[in-house]
Length: 144
Image (cartoon, helix red, strand yellow):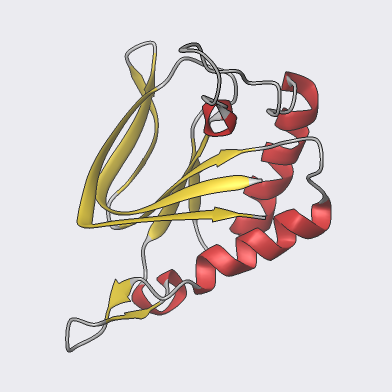
């Protein structure tokens, strides 16, 4: 499981010119799955994300989690996080989990994050347009 977490001032996901998910302040979380992913990894990752201290405190130091700071999460599936670019110029996606299994894990991850905070979502498997105002900029990559 790979995630890219970006601190956001305002973000949205559009499919076929219709906004399906949006947040103001919070986190945009891009997630990709592979065959070794399990419920335990999803639980660990959700807990890690909501407790990650990347929001500013009163002194401007990144010392607060989304739970302390407030805000929402915008979750977006992105199998291309598992692109292997070691050989040639065309990325290989063999490590990315197939559609049905990945969709099940995505839905499990979405449900797990919702235990902690409010979450908006993209549409699994759709061609999406994601717009983001990255504050900081702050971008964190985690693999489990």
